[in-house]
Amino acid sequence: MNNLNRREMMAIAGACGVTAMFGASARPALAAATLPELGYAFNALEPYIDAKTMEIHHGKHHQAYINNLNNALADFPQLEAMPLEKLLADLDGLPESIRTAVRNNGGGHLNHSLFWRMMKPGGGGARGAIGQAIDSTFDSFENFQTAFTTTALGQFGSGWAWLVASGDKLEVVGTPNQDTPVSAGKTPLLGIDVWEHAYYLKYQNLRGDYVKAWWNVVNWDFVNQLFANAKG
Ligand code: MN
Image (cartoon, rainbow, N blue to C red; front, side, top):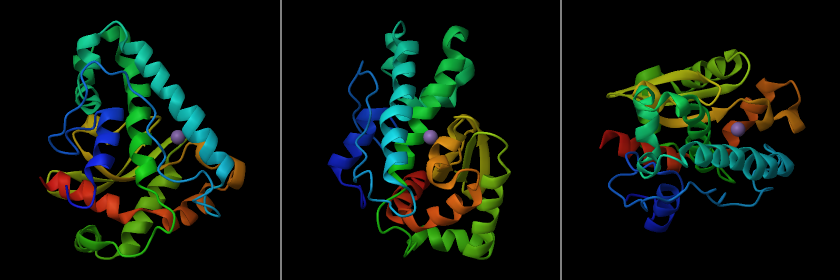
């Protein structure tokens, strides 16, 4: 279990079914998706991310993805019982009538469930094993930051920038809307939400200022947990 204790793991796995990423954990069968707890106060990421943004982002935006996902799967209990990342890994295997809804809202649920854990108050700091892997892949952490930031700022409209594991390699990729790297066979390790709802109240049009500030809240312990699981 490494640094992620069992209670935390079950909270995530039960909420969004990311069982493949978190190892062989039990997910309650036939459970509708539910909003995972944030794990810290709405104002805990101040001054980098403001409390009102966190409150609306978590309680309204994320909840809406969950509600829409549950509505889409309501008539498909056999799919609802499956781990969410399995559905997202094979979108073509879904009934066409719900494919777009699962892509958008299932992606939104998975992405945000990870995103809350990828941040913490007092973040930044020691990067451990993933830091060494980043250095060896990108030559330096600064080079990685530049690539990641360029992707985040270059995402036209809404989307995400990610550090992912692709096979045994690390890559920086962008995804539009709520698409997840899981649908491209890649494992998300670190991601930033660059939808305007993630930053507009505090930063307005200044996405670059938000991205720059966000490094101060990155939870490298959790990134390392995802990295360890990705390596299996
Ligand atoms: Mn969002």
